[in-house]
Image (tube, rainbow, N blue to C red; front, side, top):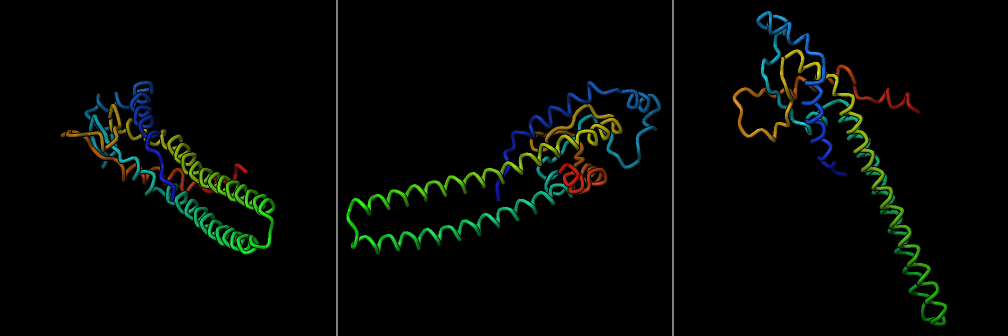
Length: 201
């Protein structure tokens, strides 16, 4: 299964931190002025929140649906590659068997044509693999964009100033991981995202 590059998650964390400082802060200020009574029960009260980005995506309904789709596409491509490989091997065998009964120039022309066919087939199948990988990257970007309002709301409710990537925090007594909370909230808003994608076509 294609692996996803982690680079987009760095921008994800930065966007969260910046979005807090640019967003209206009246809710948080009211909560602090009333001794925290405006905060919802069960939410962590911390100036720093952390999140596990890969888990946020992979354990969400959206991420699980994308993973299933990519695995299905990958399985189709694998089966197609095996079929094409068998066909090319058979064609190569037939070409080899014809070699002794052909003029060298004629055989060379057929051999060159076969080699060109193999290279073109490889390029075509590699392109299909890249397209499957791109599906995953596009899905992650869509997930990040759709998740930001949910995560910003959690920041407002907790009074936090930033959400950091959990793996980048070496030590903090105050940091609170909100991955599970965020997954539950995002699932409630997005579901698996299939209906939205179907509506786009």
